[in-house]
Amino acid sequence: MDIGQILPLWSIIPFVGMLLSIAIFPLAKPEWWERRQLQVAIFWSLVFLVPFSIAYGMGETAYQLMETVILDYVPFIVLLFGLFVVSGGIHISGTIAGTTKNNVILLAIGTLLASWVGTTGAAMLLIRPVLRANHWRKHKTHIVIFFIFLVANIGGCLTPLGDPPLFLGYLRGVPFFWTLMHIWPLLLVNSIVLLGVFAFVDRHFIKRESNEALDLLKLEREADDRVPIRIEGVHNLIFLGIIIVAVILNGVIPQTEFFLDDAGNVFGIDIHEHVHLGFNYFLQIALILLASALSMGTTKKDIRAANDFEWGPIAEVAKLFIGIFITMIPALALLRANGAALGIDSPLKFFWITGALSSFLDNSPTYVVFLTTACALGATGAGTVLTTVGAISEHILLAISAGAVFMGAITYIGNAPNFMVKSMAERGNVKMPSFFGYMGWSLAILAPLFLLDSVLFFL
Image (tube, rainbow, N blue to C red):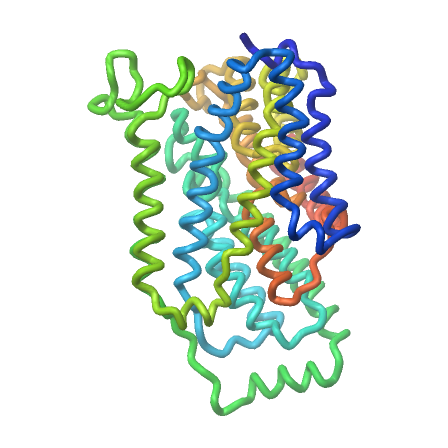
């Protein structure tokens, strides 16, 4: 039974309630929210699960939960956990003055790094030195916002390692280097524009700093005891490599005949008649947890202390996203069942609808829905990409890929690193905007940029 064909539209109310809770409670009752995030997530999950169980039975509920929690949420949070732990053991020390030039360099490095170690890995690695470099400033919210735009989202567009939607495309037959070869012009244009806008905005805010803050910056730049930049805990790069290998193996194994049974499934176990866990699932999780344990056991405590390492950011993501994943079930089911009927048939439409929904839904399943929808349109001849779900025009695949990755920057929940960066910035005494306040920034800056993308690449 395709549950999306019979679910009523109002079944997405718990998901909307979850999003409004994230938007409103941190403003209305901040201390209460800090203590009750998990309870709120459980509440909205039950608001969906209890009526759903009554209407469609415990069997269907169990299947939907297993598919969402075990197949999607667990690998998602384990990967974020591993990258958070390992990157927290790498400390970039040295004197970095928070000038506009240095900030642009740091953002550019993070943007380039994100496609190779993941947006989460790059964000967790560089947000700490960015915050330290700008500790002298009163006006620094904009720095974190542009960091989310570039490092936590747009920078992850070149490879399947960069962002989960592209990895799911890789699992469905999109060649590993396809995005690198086709999407780099978009990355170049978006990065240049955003770094240019950032430099302009940053200079504006520097002029608003007090004389005392500017004197502190001057002392830092001219001090005789400036510490050269160096990387501590560099052995954690080995553990980061283990995580990357784990992700790659999870994609390679299902495409290797040696590991498949007669039915074409990876050797593993069935926990439900429609939910199969191949040993690649367990291998990825085991390798990531092993890398995390080795990182915790071999990294000096003073390195993590220098990084102000604490569990709060990953705990906040884990608590909120379990509620998001569960309440999102009806929204994604409705999208899967009705995506082909939306009349989307051009790169421009695929770019905007995939991106708009990826801003609020998990961008990975949204990518898969529209990849499948586009393949149903059929494509032949030159400029066709063959996937396991059908043939797709490379222009449409480019639009879906860019929409899913780029527009994850529009809201805090569009991509998991957004929330982690926000949490770490707030713990570093940066006053971050509310859910809707951040959307004000993102729409003002990114919407014109995405219109430019539309004109240059998708018309």
